[in-house]
Length: 390
Image (tube, rainbow, N blue to C red):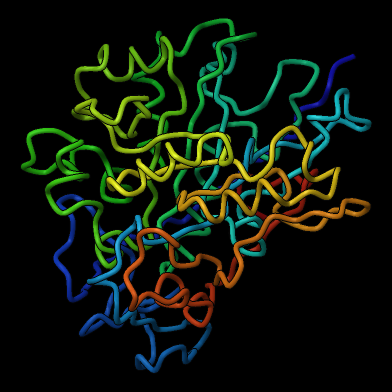
């Protein structure tokens, strides 16, 4: 039985304007927005005054007073696992029985700020495509990798006051005619066709003049303050095998690369973020990495086990762990399931319980009053986007 792929094609208008804020920009990074004295305009270049959320013609100005204090690793946000996934009806296995809304709906309505995309190179189409398992579990809200990125880019351009969005990319070679390692340059070209280097934080930009990327994270000021990277995206490679070896040049360099990589070892010169899936068994590992300054993604639930049992103990452990990104298959209520993952007190983020300074507030990280979008439509799973975005 062939499972139909749900193709999603969109055209994104990525509004790149110059940001003026009280903190110096990261070299090569241009945060969204414009205005004077740190006040920026959400959704329009013709905004009213900065009044903490006034709107004028569909635009909302924004001014985050702590944007030169709070850093990326001071936040804790919700993420989704296999963020593109649409369940087969009926699911072939229980673990695959979850369906996600399109990426822009997750951003707009569910407060998601971290995604995970599985990619395979398809020689017949000459592009990377996003789905789970060939034939038996390949329904998706955005088939082309570029379409997934354009959906994120369009939402980001319409909501420039947002926290940075962390996108994990997992190369999948099983069932792929040609391996990822043969198409690293093609992958980088596709990513940068939507997010050029001034629209996302690169390893080179973070490292700056530090001797190593690890030194930049731990010893040279750490992750950028939010005023330097607000409204941008960060990419991370989710792989520990041949794809990572090829991407990092056998663990020696990320120079010129678009993505960071999980190197498994906190002592590695390229170390910047880590995946620790189990927040219970891995609590000590998460705490150690977070306290050193690394970013950490963990999973609030896995395989639908906790959600179907109505058990939030793993979610609570993830929240308490200090991990920055809490990945779930259930970011919104599902009929018949007594479980939903959420960040308590989040707007949608909350201050990280291990790292945030005392002055931190959820609205200082991201304030809903500043998120009034420019005209933008979102589609539900199963809908098809026309090339014109209609």
